[in-house]
Length: 275
Length: 275
Image 1 (spheres, one colour):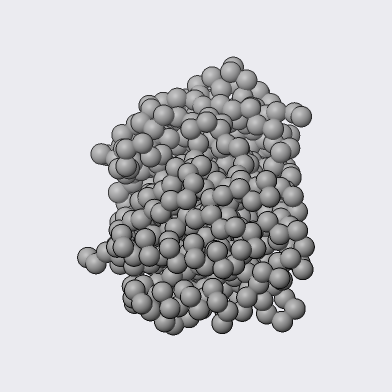
Image 2 (cartoon, helix red, strand yellow):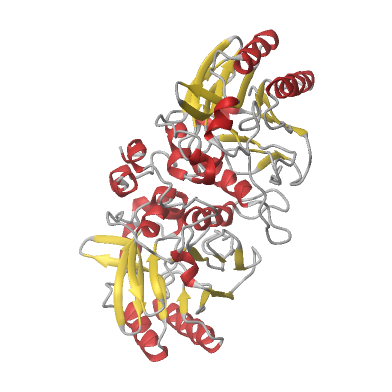
């Protein structure tokens, strides 16, 4: 069965340095391509950095999808024949969104706007009202959501129901303490999101301290059984993780015998979840 | 803050030996009570065993809630002033259900019928159509679901939305291989169910081979952050695990700063999950 090499480039953007961050992403994409990657995931808000202090500041670092960052990713994806998913700070009229672009070759297949805003993000970003982006790419059907979205299993269910074989999630996981020997909780939730939906999930975290905030730096690629195929050692600095993914495996929702995690759902009983 | 000692009694019922299985549960409850437990969870189908081969066989080992098994649990719970949650094979007219009783002292607060039937269960059991049982007990608000139900995060969401502080889940997790060093996938999903809902989850697995089927034997009690408080070493035989749970912690859905995992949900965007 065909395999697709998926990479997460866990880099360290610098707050407000849009030109420098573009260069970081270009260098990371070049390294991942040289190592054989076909689908490349970049962190959340990699264009701008994360720790804003006002809407005005976020707005001043925001770009439209036809701005320099996404246009660069389209040129790189076209040049190398790859898919790139990356987070960027999006300007749209007076609104600022925490967005991610899905680029296949020279084509912008979708821009997803984060629907579940974490903590102070709500003070500057407008939440998106559209479901996770899902599109057919040259390597298979790919879905996109961002960071805190992954903590809402209703949301992770949507791209799976839409046929996504791989969910790409730019994230910035703020560091929180954990018991010795335990994986980050975010990692565990990605394992569950993948396993209960039988799809691959690639979560690309970031490195680098920003205004005193540290990150888990725990990028991970998980298979449809929920097992990690590749992961950063939490606390790693900039690093690229890669895994060979048989994306076709995600088309089979059977889990043994007569069971199938899509067919076995009881959606008529789930009304309360959507009220 | 008050703590409640929760126990999972991972015992080994014998297929079709209803009287013997009742004795096993009585002995397990007595041991747990002696060790200080207030809420005691027993495995799925502990009254009857699991590996049936026909509906007739399942029917022959089924009891109504006023049958000997649940009545025993009510007497024991009344005698010791505890809550017992246990799985039993339920007869109701021509139907057979994979059910669990929630008993508080001498009172039967609810009977939950498994809604998501695993593999061949669908050949003999009728699926339940009611949501997970949730009720106020002397120790706090407790929800009940069974085994494969836990793999549907929409389902685990329901008791959390109904205010359950602790979800008790009788399970029979069939053994499947896993990569070295990895926890059972079922364990990981319980961690996620607990964490994304900020409720305690106690999953009571079973031991003992039955008609060639082995079990994970991986009972686990998880806190609202998703960390395991107690767990069986997978592959353990009969064992009781116990944890002190501050059930009040589950009333706070805040996860840092302005974020709250209930208030941050976007239910109007989740319609597709219930279609």
